[in-house]
Image (cartoon, rainbow, N blue to C red; front, side):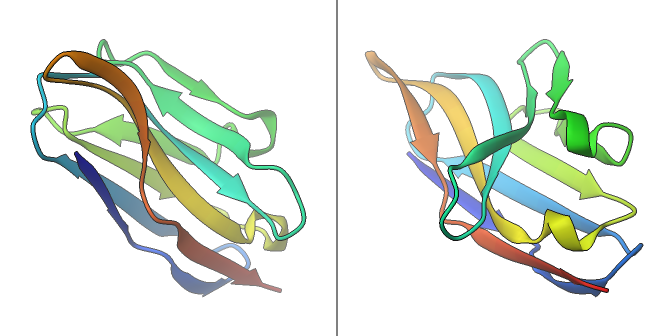
Length: 118
């Protein structure tokens, strides 16, 4: 199983970006998918998650500005980030809880860098 993330980049304060992350490989089912972010020297923190039923959860600092969604097949997760702030600058990682053959595991994609300048 692999998670392939894309969509990071450099933007100005107030602009928008959309991240996407596609799961591939031997997948029986995907439970929750989500996005985390990490600043250098800091712990990785939750940004947003979405369950297979579409229930979403957001970290306080991004609520109302970011929207997480999944495609109809359920294998791709998106993070629409509006009104970006310099404090949103971080490496963003996608995560998925996946049934693959006989195992249930958390998988992580390689990070994608988001830089917001003022």
